[in-house]
Every structure is written in C-alpha cells, then in structure tokens.
Amino acid sequence: MPSLTEDRLPTGSRPALGPAFRASIPVLLGYLTIGLAFGLLLVRSGQPWWLAPVMSAIVYAGAAQFMAVGLLASGTSIAEIAALTFVINARHMVYGLSLLDRFAPCRRFKAYLVFALTDETYGILTTVAPPDGVDHESFYATVSALDQSYWVIGSTLGALIGGSLPFDTKGIDFALTSLFIVLLVEQIRVVRRPAPYLVATAATALAFLLVGPANLLIVAILASIVGILPFRKALS
Amino acid sequence: MSALELGAPWAYALGAILAMAAVTILCRAAPFAFFIKRRPPAIVDYLQKYIPPMIMTVLVLGSYKGISFRATPDWVPGIVAGLAVAVLHLWRRNTLLSILGGTALYMLLIRLM
Image (cartoon, rainbow over all chains, first blue to last red; front, side, top):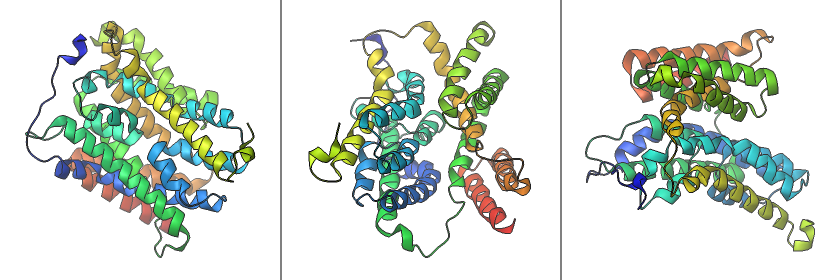
C-alpha cells in the first residue's frame, strides 16, 4: 500500500446534493449557455445532433470541443485533431499534480473525478470546502457530475433547438469569468503570499506576448510553475 | 486515414471524438498514473500548495484575453463587471450574490453600451 493512500478524507452522513448543487450554480449558468452555443455550432457545421451529447459525455473539454467543430468541418486528419487536443488540454496535467494529495484517499469515485476535471470543476474542488458532516468524496463527485450534466444538457439542447431560443442570453457566459474571480478572491484569503499571484500575472503577460491568445493558458501555467520555483525557500 | 472508407458519413467524426476523448483522459490522468506507486518528490509538495492560486490567476486573466483596448468601450463591461464581482465578494462573501450580480451587470452593460 503506497503511503499516499493512508490519509483519509472527512466522511459524514449528511447528503452532499444540496451543498454540491449550491456550489455548482455558477457553472450551471455558464455550462448551459456555452453548451447551447457549442451544440448549435456543431449542428450548423453539418454534424448530426447526437454527436453533441456524445462528445460532451466522453470528451467533456469545452475549448477542445469548440476547436473540433471547425476541424471536423474541414476534414482535418484524426492524428492532427488528437495533437491539437493535447496542446489545449495539457494544462490539466498540472491540475492533477496539485490534486494528488486531495484525491489520494478517494476510492469509489476517483476515476470519475479525474475524468471530469474541467477548469471550473477544478476551481470549485480546490477552493470550496464541503460543509461539516458531508462526505468529502461524495461532495467532490456530486459537484463533478452536476457540472458535467449541465454541459451535456446544454449542448444537447443547443444541437436540437439552439436556433429557435426565444430569449437573448448574450453575455450570460460571464458567469464563468465571475466564478474564476470569486475563486481567486477565495484563494487570496487562504494563500496570503503575494508571490504566486505576481508570478502568475507576469507569466500570463509573458505568454500573451509570446503566443498571443491561442494556447495562452498552457504557456502561462508552465511559465508560472517555472517562475515560482525560485521562491521555494522564501515561501516555505 | 480515410474516414469515408469506414462507411457512415459520421464515422470520421466519431473516430475523431474517440481520439479526443482518449487524449483528454490521458492529460487528466497522467499525474495520478505517474505517482500511483511512488511518493512525489518534495518539489511537488511545494507546487501543490501554490498551483491553485496561480491557476486561478491565469484563468481570470485568460478570460480577458479576447478584449481589445483599441475599440474604446468594448473592454469596459468586462472590466467593470469583473471589478464589481471582486468588490461584491470581498464585501459580502456570498458566492451566488457575487456571480449573479456581476453577470447581470455585465449583461446590462453590453446592451447599454
């Protein structure tokens, strides 16, 4: 038994659904509307509607799915699509790296937690503490599953009826930017050292100058990690 | 590979989706698979602590990567609503209030400006 698994997560008998749902409401707003846009775009590009739920169920990576719409329409080779997907999603390797300890004691849902690790779910799981008495692993899994259900439902609706929606949702996807800002404020309350924020800001600026908006995230995250290394002595 | 040889017109799309799913799972599972038996080095312990604040910083700034400061009022709604979210959250610390308030303000501003 590896030493990593000896720690235990807090358990409890209170239902996880209520608190998990409350934590996921910002993602509900963002994923439903962005999913709608994705489903609509996919169908308009000439694909059958059911590819939207299939893709959202088994790929479940927003940026890569949007990218794929154009690539599929232009008949890009599968090898090239796979390579571009890797570039877009490589940042998730870093996410996992920072969740090794948190997920180590997980048993029942660990495989799903790893599979469903999007930017937004990562932000919630690393920042929002489950309430007392709630089983932590159940809370993580319920947040993850709710988030994915919003994405699948949104993209399916978009593919089926996206063109005939009666209301104007333009701008509602700002909920995801708002979520990231809230999670950043919460991080600042916990990690009260300026270095990580300054390093990440400098790294993002550098990445923007180097590669522009495309591939910004992965370059910025890698530059952040390199940039924080010299502070190891000062921060510990 | 020629997708049309697979038969149905959507076979190519389905093949591409399966490849995308495999690559995405690989990215998400890689660190867990790599450290399944071995203890991560001390440097990973250090990084685990500081990666979340750095990633949240990158994700917030990355949300604004599309704005143009040349087209004058275009950047105003995003910046104003973003600051409103931060101020609301520092003030009341109510996640839903911060997010719904900021999003509503953003939706209002892009329609007014």
